[in-house]
Length: 95
Image 1 (cartoon, rainbow, N blue to C red):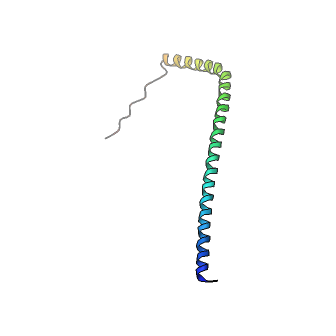
Image 2: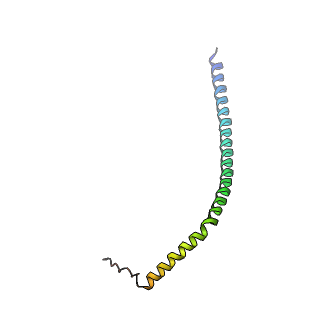
Image 3: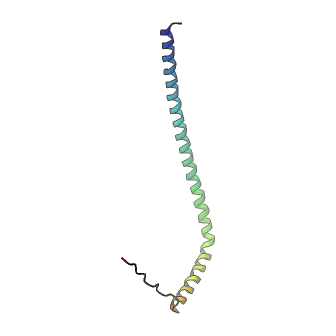
């Protein structure tokens, strides 16, 4: 085997490896993009399910929360009218 043939074989082999690496990297990028699209689609579907569940929970909890909030506001207003809230003392910082 001559040196010239060995050099040609090495050049051809390295060119084939480079082309194979480029094709492989293009396929990997395509697979990653397909995975991204699938995950985003699933996240949209999950968002729809979670929003539906949240809306369903709000239907049952809203009247209870409204009553609790109303009772809290009534107590807070009564406390404020009785003089329960005081203004915080002013803090002076030395310049």
